[in-house]
Image (cartoon, rainbow over all chains, first blue to last red; front, side, top):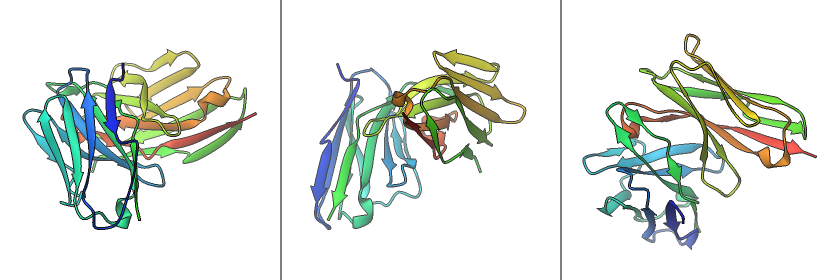
Length: 115
Length: 112
C-alpha cells in the first residue's frame, strides 16, 4: 500500500503547454511538499503546504502553483512549460508539530521532459 | 544563511570496502539531522535521524555520527554492498515544515 503516490511517472510535453502532476498520501500527514531534482540530482524544495500555510521557495517561478483539494492531496500545476522545467519532481509528506518535523516520505517521482 | 554542505560529491569504492560521507551544517537553530538514501529512479528514504543529544547511532551497516559543537555529521558504511550504490542526502529540518535545508548529496558507486 503506497504511502505517497504521484502520477504520472513520466510526462513528455511541448513547450508552452500547461500540465499537472497529482500527488496523494495515505499517511494522515498534515504537511505535503513538492521538490524538484535537476540533472545534477540536487533536490530543491519548491513548496510546503498544510492546512494553515503555504510556504513558497522564492526561486520558484509563478508559473508553478500547488493546488490542494484536501489534506491528502497536493497537485502541482505548471503553466507555459519551458525547456528548463525538465526535471524529476517529487511529492512528499510529513507531520509537523511545534518546533519539530518528522521524516519526509517521498513519492516515486515524476520525470518531466519538455521538448 | 542556513547551509548544509556534503562531501565528497561522488565516491567510487569496491564492494566490501568501508566509506565515510561527510555533512557540515550551519543551520540554526538546530534540533536534528537526517540522512536519506536515494536509489536511482526512486524517492529518498530516511536512513536515520540524529538529534542534538546523540553522538552515534547505528542502523545495520550504517553508522551515523553527530558533533553538535563542530556542526558536523558523518555516515559510515561498513562492508559495502552493490545495493549501497545511491545518493545520500543530509537534511537539517527547520522549526517549520517548509524550512528544511538539504545538502546536495553524495553519489556513491559500489563496484564489484
